[in-house]
Each structure stands twice: as C-alpha cells, then as structure tokens.
Amino acid sequence: EPERRERLLENSALLRKLLTEAGIDTGPSTSQIIPVVLGDNERACTMAAALQQEGFDVRAIRPPTVPPGTARLRISVSAELNEETLRRFASCAARIWATLTPCSTVSS
Image 1 (spheres, rainbow, N blue to C red):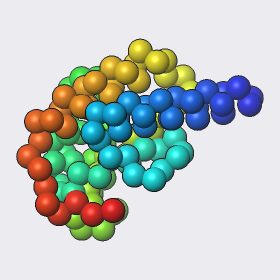
Image 2 (cartoon, one colour; image 1 turned 90 degrees about the horizontal axis):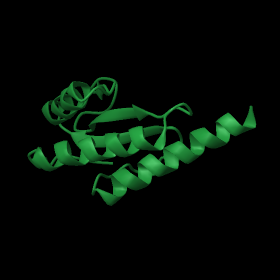
Image 3 (cartoon, rainbow, N blue to C red; image 1 turned 180 degrees about the vertical axis):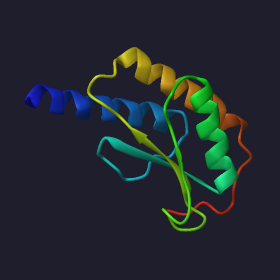
C-alpha cells in the first residue's frame, strides 16, 4: 500500500514542521518517530502528562532507555491521523512547551 506509506511520511513531515514552527526542536529525525528532547525527567513527564490530559497517547522516555540529561517524548505518527488532529496536537504541545521551565541539561 504505497499510498499509506506516502501518507505516513506526509503526516510526519507536517507535524515536524508545525512543532518546529512552534519553537519545539524535533532533531534530525525524518521518520514517523519524532523525538522531543526535554532534558530532565520532570519536564518530560510533565509534558507527557499534559498531552495525555488533552487526549494524546504520548509517553516520556527516560534513563536508562535514553542517556541521562536527554529525557524526551517519543511521538509516533500514523497514516490514519488527519491534518486537524496533527494541528491540534502541535497547538497543545506548543502551549504546554511554553509553560515549562527551561532546562540547561538538554543535549542532542
């Protein structure tokens, strides 16, 4: 089903673009897995919990799964998501991101 693969890549590119425009660094990834590095565990857990409250299934990924100081969200995009959902996610993520205390331990 090449159209599903194409749709998946389009959805991933759109969400990555929306997050980047909101000032959220998604790193060099170009796949359907979009990382958002927050640095410390508390920030990652806070943002994940807030997005879950908005109805999104997002998890914080923390050490030992990732190196210390690189706790992150791992956002998985699917071909079934529509543009409205992606835009709503990006809007919620941007609003939540803006409320987080900056972290000086973020590394790439």
